[in-house]
Length: 69
Length: 463
Image 1 (cartoon, rainbow over the protein chains, first blue to last red):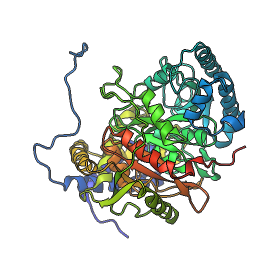
Image 2 (cartoon, chains in turn red, orange):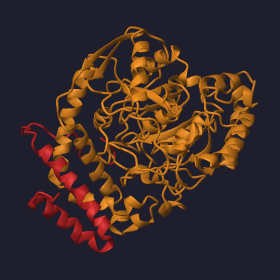
Image 3 (tube, each protein chain N blue to C red):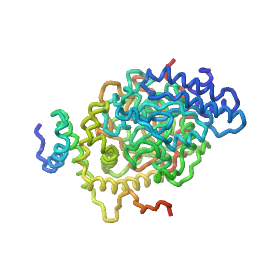
Image 4 (cartoon, helix red, strand yellow):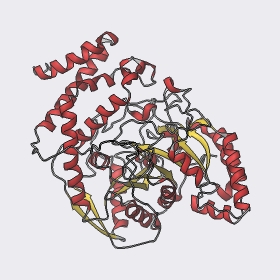
């Protein structure tokens, strides 16, 4: 079955192909296409969820002092 | 000796040591012999630390003889997953490129266990880089596929593979493993053991290989839930060398209790093998003798995607040099010679979105868990996979695992214990996942379940 055209997927996959394509066999590249497509779909699923400005990342940044004070 | 100590829980061994019925030196020699003789059969061991262990055992013997008792782990042999830095042996991370790697310090967990008087006997086999490159089959370790002592055609689970196989085959009474997503509960469940994944930040990660800084947790595998609590008591606590180790005191509370309130996610057995479903259903009947069970739901959000994106992005950064240099071609599993490159396709904004949704995940999980002592679920969806074949995994998105995604994504504690045998004679398990920092509640539930069952008293035929 032919893939549905997906310019966003093709663009991010091109990043992967440009960076690492010379290291890969055609079979590995094809496997990577499937994995990248799944990752793009996953990212889309997250983007579809609306959050507010008040929804912060669950990662607290704390300015550093070596003496811990 | 074997009849007296083999497959005895840590607590019983500790009592024997305290009463002088066995000495730390005798006990250590017994387990060292098994590690050397039987360990290779299961590919469970990377390095047996005989000289180091005997020195620790002799010290323990002298102290115990002089009445200087350090606690329930004094003189107890153990194994450490080979991602924990040790000065006395290489720390290979299960991966060929690091087979000769050495550190000039001990991981905090190793240091704490030494302070507790435990005897480090071996560095145990693991999936290379704790599975962080995305493995799909058991032969993903430079020491070979780790074999399940219950069925030598099956995998022991991973990535704490050797920790599972070694305790299950009586090579050590307990082991330290790690979990980013599944790596303690998998080998514990597949090998018929108790495995405890503590709350994120309960145990210092200093000196442990980092796969994913915000998902990695260290915890014990042992024969009983009670033993897991005893070990956690020794290794938990703040650490100036690890700013993520929480400044929260922990003391294991072993008091029995009844009247639990359990929740169970709707559809939690979907996709599980029939034997897993059957054994879980039977376990629920037992659990209803110690408490109530209610079906609960979480909002319909892409939980696995959230945790998977966090894992993959942080792993990509943690192993940036190895990946970009092409060093991944030296790893054992053929699929990881290319799959890590896919992580470059995840955009920064999507990672930050995952972190924002992580807060939603944690809030929703706590909203549910605040009403219950624990959520119960099958520990794994199947019996241990067969060797030589690809398996289904939530990390590679070929299996669902909401409990694992939420439990690890939100940093929640869980303990799994055996609940039966499957069609191929391999263990299945049940897990109890509690609210953050409620390890004692999860352990109490698991202990109560084990007081009514005897699956933990069954062991594979090894000798």
